[in-house]
Image 1 (tube, protein in one colour):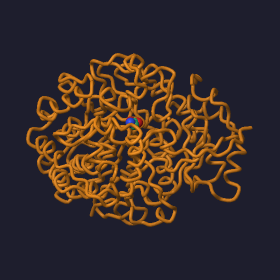
Image 2 (tube, rainbow, N blue to C red; image 1 turned 30 degrees about the vertical axis):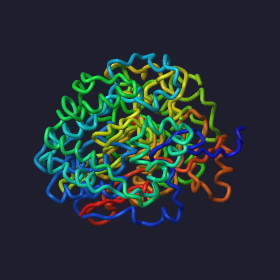
Image 3 (cartoon, rainbow, N blue to C red; image 1 turned 60 degrees about the vertical axis):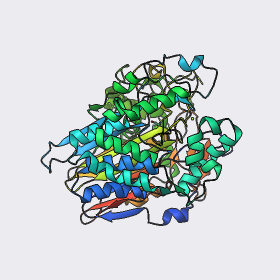
Image 4 (spheres, protein in one colour; image 1 turned 90 degrees about the horizontal axis):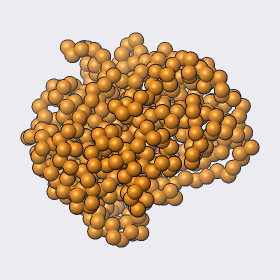
Length: 581
Ligand code: GLY
């Protein structure tokens, strides 16, 4: 029996800096409802109130959910510079209601970063620096956010590019105040700079302008007007400012100065894909999510379908040890399959249909022991034992019933730490989401197969899980999260609570669990399962328990449970606040 002592996992102890980070909010803080609100017509829930307000401003001016999503994202680039931004990439899942004259339906937009042409599959195995895929120019994948957002706007938006970018440009000029999440997310990074003093010169922009030379305090004004120049060029010139213009040129210079291989053709050839979303029917609801190269939608849907096959009652609460055991077992199967099967579908066949099929999910459900957890080797379809950020999610609904779930990232906190000084933004370190060294886990402790090796033009596997839940009346919920693999488990549990009838506020705030198969450990937030005997009961199922300060940061909008309108919440773990009318 594995009655191991509870492990306390902190970002610092494993040397990582997860953007959703370590906002150490007490239950009391979470119980406050400043992070949730009710809106009659339209709403945006982002993980920073200024970004929610930027999107809401566009909705109030008559824009649709896509216009608002694009405005929100550009604003996040300014106010959550360690989570996402124009140096990164992302995914959107979109529902068109048909009420505004556009065709009804759902689709996904993929603007995930791509591997530069000059990077071979064994690139990182040949480099001496063991963290080259996480810090510095080698870790930078070709950014996709600028091209992706502008494509979404041109194809599905209604407003002028200059109007949609205006709120972000204003924010970049005026600056914003560092909040509690900014401080908690950057504390470990400051320690790392102190431990590597040469970084203060190498990554001078991040050190001096964003970390205020290690002295950043809550309430400090962070002002990077250089980004207003980039955003203004994008507003004026469109994507060409990046693909063939001054913003792109500055990116290449910044990467080259730090020894990287990004080249102009990588930027010029960046392609955005509009694809069919992943779908699953669970407990009478239609779930619409992100397909590969995100593992998010399919891994979450596989776990939920396994639970459905077990006869799990989705209308009941999550918080009993018996239910938590079943959720954990379903996650172990789904994450084992994530490790085995996933990669960029443009380069490898990902058997999505089989992983979500009735027969397969029923067969995995049948292998679950309701009384005990089992060794890691028995999970998934071909589990192998070989031997763990910055991200931001927002949800939007408009007055026509359109919805956007959008998750974007630069990967770890402040991404690669390589900044583009002329234009005041940082570049991603998304290369670490590839399998960079065979047999090793990535920064999130995730095992991955050779399907996810780097390769020219390939997109690294992601856990981002923008998701829309539909029922007979249209959109029931729009959700997603930041937090590496805890994106999947955080989004899943928030949606399970919504399906069980919880408010948006309760759905995002209640404590969560996380299991990702390997490490074979059930992580709990500090205030999860604290009732008398509950943790002992979980250990009685054979689970080794760990504790993690925060399991994802979820932004969720749900149709109001009574009356009309929308119930919106920004996860109190990250300190955001929704906006709308
Ligand atoms: N970089 C985190 C993810 O895409 O899963």
